[in-house]
Image (cartoon, rainbow, N blue to C red; front, side, top):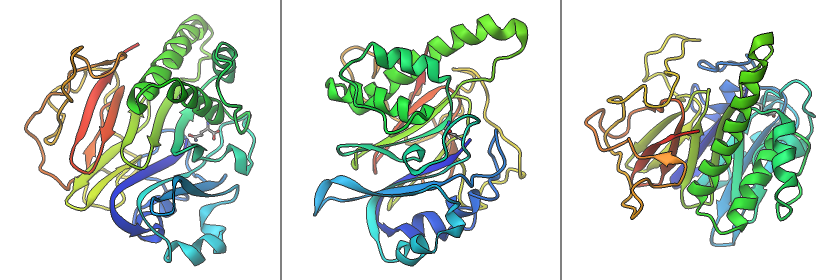
Length: 308
Ligand code: GLN
């Protein structure tokens, strides 16, 4: 598995977002604390950031080497600042190519995407075959195929959150069917579909069998696979994410508001259960329960159930 993050708010240097935090993405590349699958993220890394005064498309820097070995990144990370950054460190899934083009973030127009997880590529190629308008994936890596499915939905006019929810639930449903069929043999590695996407104005994320946290404060919102400091008292290696949609009612936090929508549920495949509830105040790390769609901007974070 990988670790990823997205920052949206005041301008911060890439080093401030990615490198400097004590338990930040740099450290997570060699010592993640809450990763459920895999122990080290040394197969590559990538950072995407926006410079809206220059152009709507983000810049990207990706390498198929461990983040800690890249002196070039270290040389400019403290000199580049942005109000929207999406970054990832990679632990390649078995069978996936280790190359720059298989490394997140994937990009299309103004969008950036990272995938923390694994998906049977047969499911993804079958879905792509039915969507001829999908852009050609950058790589045969599962994450690149998944990104192409999201780009296709966005090109078809879907809102970003809708596109992500639709792709994740569609892929998740197909994977669940296959896994149920294979379960008898005990050969069903679980599909994991934690996706993080941004267009420079909002962050959309999913939890699907991996960890995700967010922190909304006065200067912006950080969404990350795990907290980048030690303000959350969880022992190393311990993971507290409950499995199963709806299993954590009452654990949703303050600052959560569902957008008003004529249809009731905010997105076709997301069920509105994350109403405003009392909880920790702003600027603390909040864990996102499993099978959720997160939509964040600098003012609020909304969570909805993802249903198959
Ligand atoms: N399956 C993706 C890859 O191979 C993501 C891996 C991960 O989340 N560790 O890159």
